[in-house]
Length: 265
Image (cartoon, rainbow, N blue to C red):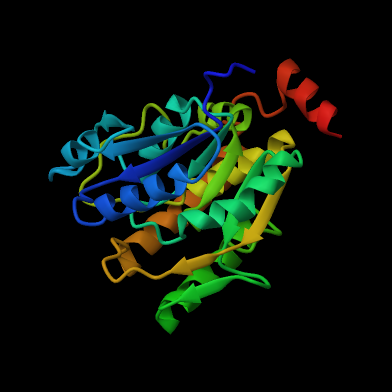
């Protein structure tokens, strides 16, 4: 493993986040300054019309990807594929899950898990400031996800997820709904890209761990309850339809992936 390779890549998708992104970058910078390893921070700017990209570019040690506005799923994919670290951490621009929660996910990657997701459910998880109706909506959506596409995962939508670099490269090259041909979108586009990502991870045979974390509800959230619920439901149904139609390329591990998976067993 090259000594020039960062231990950790932090990928932040951002759309019109000139208010929330600077304190998030400051929090990440302060955390990384206390760590003994090398890390990189990537902001995947989803075609922002405000000064998000410029602010990120003016922040020391931050790399910016300027993208067309095609939604959060597309931005996350672009950032993950551009990441150079041994591990890739995906987090939201509002840092709803504090950076210190990475300390809870990291040991699972060291133990050989390929995908480790922060969860707002389960013993030890904390949801702070969330309106009751939003929690109910989230649980109903999770019931649909488990019924249609992905049993056994209690929270697919928490924006705090980590992958080994090999898993990130493999999975994000396989995604179809928000892949390289994703169409332009209008306004903020919160999506269920996570469901497709985790569905593919399980299909390939990657080890997935779900880890309870602390999550803070943001009053400036871009989630539109009606519009985004319908979009997310559509995404879940598309995952199931794609699977039934055999549209996921390389549904089984490649030779290199089989070698990696076998080595971990």
